[in-house]
Length: 419
Image (tube, rainbow, N blue to C red; front, side, top):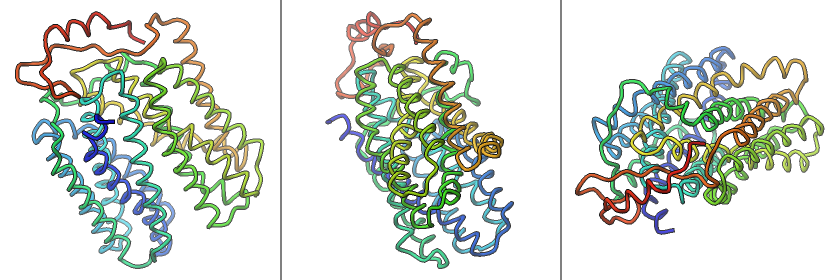
């Protein structure tokens, strides 16, 4: 717990950032519809957000190399606050299309900074727990942000002002943190996709998580409406999935620290597929059944990311934190761009539950790949991380004590095969 408290300021900043993100993520399409914006323009806002997201993954490591983690985080949160503030002041569909790209850029860069920072502070014994707390804080923020919108009038400027203020508030904990920043690392111009080959299961999982979570976030409200849920019931449907995702992050993270992460990942993927099957079978307007299934989907679909990131970082090892964080977010972003589009043919063939047929298919594929790798790849029972001797004057990632050559060599003796 003391290790988690050491990065509490970073977790708080991330939570505040996602409160604002959850608020403006619902606010923008609702306000756009109220203003009479064309449906194609609203869709284009989603595309430019994704383009900005991918660009943020590429640029963030260079920003960190230039300014350090804390100052780079401050910069991207300020960019997000600027973009959301202007959305509230400048009601124009083309302006919003451009400004959404800035928001996507800021969120991807913030995630790259936070995940590389957290990975520097973690090791193989607690990395899953670290990312469990990190993801739980983010989902809690998203949930709170969506609930805030129910208390406000989206036709007014106040929700945009509040979202901008929350972005500004996210600057404070990180700017004032006593948590040591990671040591300087080489910042390549482009992330190397060869790194993904060192963790094929984790990298594939990140891409598939992008496919499924993006399709769910985009089309689940459409499904809820098509099966007969009211607008208020649809809001609860989405909120329950986020709450379940937040609640299960920490238990799943701790479990992945004690067991082979691939087996945990495979079990979660298979459970996501089974929840997809439940939605295909039970297409009913009964709110209780839909909320139970939404909770199950959130608890499985939304807990995959933290385990996958921990697995990738364990396998690739130290010295590539920035590059790995950016590369994984690029894979996630590519999946997020493709997911809603790839889902459409299945939805056209299956009707309302086609979204969950898509989730069923992609997660069965992921579970099958993981099972194949477990049977064929030679690994140690538990995930381990290679350690290297730290440079003189540096501190160890968790205790704050000087790392010794003996401790480093001891870490190398316990290094297992790649998973």
